[in-house]
Image (tube, rainbow, N blue to C red; front, side, top):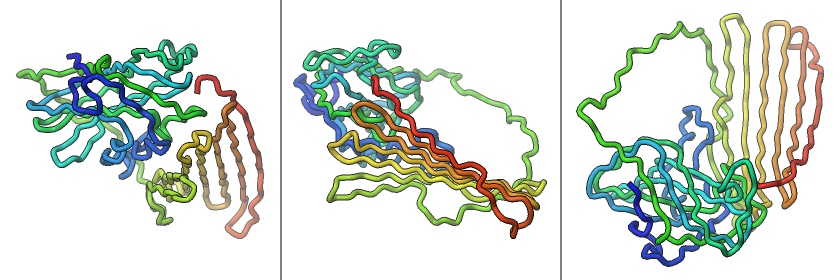
Length: 330
């Protein structure tokens, strides 16, 4: 069914304009872009994110099963040619906890066609469609279906160079829900999967003691920092004696009120070793942007050692790649 957004409970749900101008830190509780099953990969309770967004709630008197793509059509006006629009669908329990069901993002420059750039005309309203990622979710009766709208989602979405103020008109906006109706035989049954015997690998976990995911706020400067340890670190010893080691750290920083302050950094260290030799490398990557271009700086250093642990280690590669990529629609 297609539900008018004005039917949801929210700010100015009767039809007046709703201003969307999200803090730059919106998105810190998005979870990992490519989750690998670590404890902190998936998004936590979304109440903090919801507090930074404009939310529209629909109380469910009956259970509701959703299966497929949720489509959100928003009548939106921007005060700048460039802006981002992010929509999340959440399941809000009676105790107030908010579970992320699915989400979608739209660079308004590519609202018509991803293959071309069509800047928004400031002050001119357009109805744009945000397609949320396909999902399947059972909403219990008594829960609220929440549509949360924001103009920022760091670090998943790189911010435009200037902060835009969006205005959404709920009376001309709608949500299309792919409701699934249960049948008598709706169970899917799979046979046990066949697989080969796994290699006997000895795993030695990383003992750095660093948290997998944490963020901090410098109150004086307004800077927010997100630190992520993907959890791949530690050693793996293979049956043939090969020792593989790796560690990594990702850092994302942004300052409130300044989209061009965004910084994304990644550091990796990988080693391979067997009796008589060792090879290892370290890389760093740093992405920044001003109003004109992205700057991407990558460094690579590699060492090799022939002989036992007392043999000298030789630096065999030391490179820096410094590139500028013009901003077009981003």
